[in-house]
Length: 192
Image 1 (cartoon, rainbow, N blue to C red):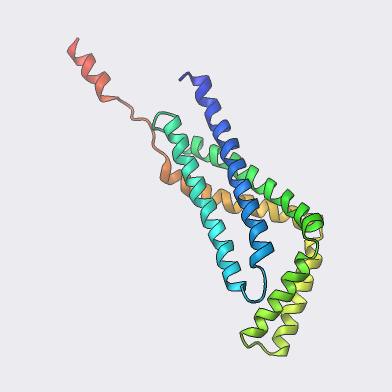
Image 2 (image 1 turned 120 degrees about the vertical axis):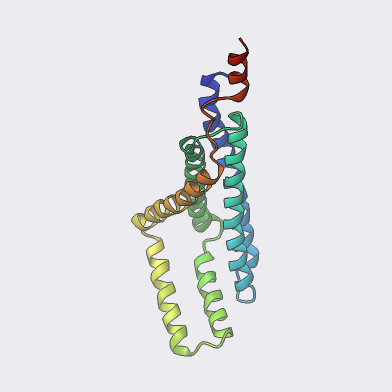
């Protein structure tokens, strides 16, 4: 592989896996919100959301290892993080755009259903009326804030920062620098 091809590999793999992970997250987001988000399944819903997060981390780790293999078994921290960061940007921006489409066109009543399910679940676990009112007020504030463009953009920035921290950790684990001297070359030099 030439140096030019090697420098293109991180971008092509990042784009490919960023799109794949974004599509998986979109499918899971839609499925969870349509079928699991109700008062009877709130615990399962939150476990599934957590599992989606874990799956994203596993797939980002797979991307990093695949990138290292594509570069001949060696990858610097910078190359690995660059690969992951491009994928993270694709995942976060795509997810944000899809959530906007989902909330405005696919399931406009989602936030109201989420509030009702949360209140029903809170009541189910034995909360008193004062706690229910407090939860309802907090939900109303969150729903009102979710319509703010600045709040939405801030949430995307926080998602990128959060996943980038995870990307740093993955990069530190997966990196494998080329050795300074390759043993075979050294042996050949001594034989001449």
